[in-house]
Amino acid sequence: MNEPRTVPLRPRDRLYAAVTLVLAVLLLPAAFVRRPGRARELACHWALQMRFPAEDLTGLTEGARAAFTAARAEALWRHGQLIGLTSGYRDPHVQQRMFDEEVRRSGSPASARMLVLPPAESGHVKGIALDVRPHEGARWLEEHGARYDLYRIYDNEWWHFEHRPDSGGTPPRRRPHPGVGHVTESGDQSAPEPAEWH
Image (tube, rainbow, N blue to C red):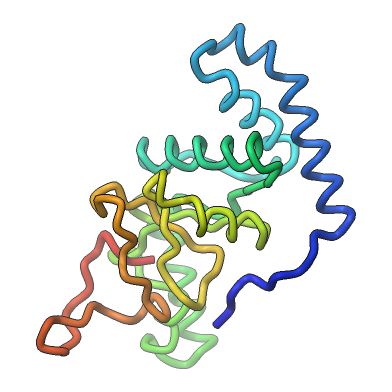
């Protein structure tokens, strides 16, 4: 089901993680001067910006951004684990284009919804969805993300997490793929709740 594979870290990946951690340590004094109460997060952010220069956290809700920043700071400082963002907030027009392209590729809206949702249902458009990398970072987030209200949502997308502060610490029910709606107590499939979609 597209689970992240359990493979040993390649030497290159270990090197990236070690260099990023050393860089964060070196940046810590400057971060402390700039933001004493959040120096570790800031130093981590700076170091990860150098490792993942193309990532963009703008457009995420304030809560999703804060949760992701805190989670990946803990991952780096406590476990030496890197977590990068490949996709966060998406403009509705970008999401619509992605959905339309998937409809053309797969042949139908129903099959497209297994991978991409239309803008009105997408957590990316709402600024609560985070597609992360590498596999090891996603595994770390799956194991520890609940402390930050970050949850993996779909079986077929190991990389996709959403910020769900309203969950009360209980992981939302994971679905096979984005196109699957909720099942009611009677067993009927109901309309999806927008806050829970990709």
